[in-house]
Length: 413
Ligand SMILES: *[C@@H]1O[C@H](CO)[C@@H](O)[C@H](O)[C@H]1NC(C)=O
Ligand SMILES: *[C@@H]1O[C@H](CO)[C@@H](O)[C@H](O)[C@H]1NC(C)=O
Image 1 (cartoon, rainbow, N blue to C red):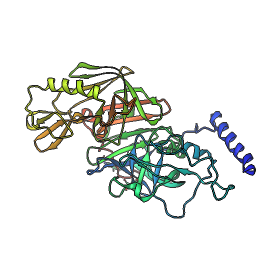
Image 2: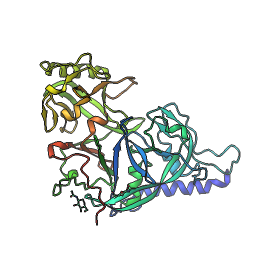
Image 3: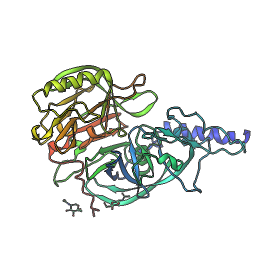
Image 4: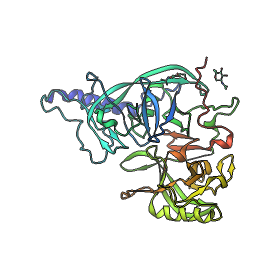
């Protein structure tokens, strides 16, 4: 053990130095952003991207790690390596704080880093070696994919059983959260681009993500870069113990009337299909929507998990989806995240559409007031900017006569 110490000290001090010296700390931009296609899995309503040797990983806004199954022979890291500490900066619920900084039982001179990958759908964690996998994507000018790019990324190995409940064919999870070993952070270092990413979740067809943040041009041709014409931005906030994305809202309005007074903690999650509201928020929001749609023809009993369902043939359509009252999140910055019919009404069968917000099932202490789910993010461009610590949003792209499925995936020149 004593023989290891100088090397450890050196590693620690180099790591501190590089954090202090701006020219070491990933300041040299100049590479090209990476683009990947996003597919929504019909069965699980999760979103995947073909990021691991062309095979799909589930995108997880709340996950701090990339993880996948590993072949028997794979590279590993020492338990004292700084990436091992990063891989341990967040622990899945109920997971022991072991796996880094401690030598192997059988050989005190060797230590292998173990990580704790977490499957958020099955709500299970496992243990596996920290390793490197090959991440694959294309670089992009924002208009087309240009050339295939791959880079080695730090990832955790997971037992095969940890793939339970993920979409068929998925080989793991790509954590997009706010850690040093998330996919966006590693893509930024590998490509020498900004630590930010643009996420455009599809309702069907292929959506798009750009690591490096942009530009992003959607068809029809000749349109402006969506990332520079955002509807608003708001600061990203931290929620202790959670590596995911949180913002703060001053209130919620339904049909322009404020029904909930802030400040409210709002999380964003690609793990849940529909926005979840804490019970004290759910009640007033549903009541207000019910009142504002009193004249509309209902479908009873409603189709679970929803409480308000309507005869969709009589709702009336607009460019922004069914003509229903707007739900507004009034954000800390003063910007408003507006939810129109396309993001509030879920078509549950041919003639029925339901108000797509659900009550939070299990409320842990300090639970956010709102967790925005996949359906409410679809066809909105979101820019998660870790450098400016802010979230940017386009609002529903239908308003600009485009969708998240309008990236031109034909290889460009
Ligand atoms: C790169 O882009 C091409 C053209 O769209 C696509 O066929 C290929 O699958 C992409 N590669 C990756 C790794 O996403
Ligand atoms: C998509 O990109 C390709 C390659 O640049 C181009 O030839 C094609 O016209 C584009 N498609 C549309 C609909 O603009």
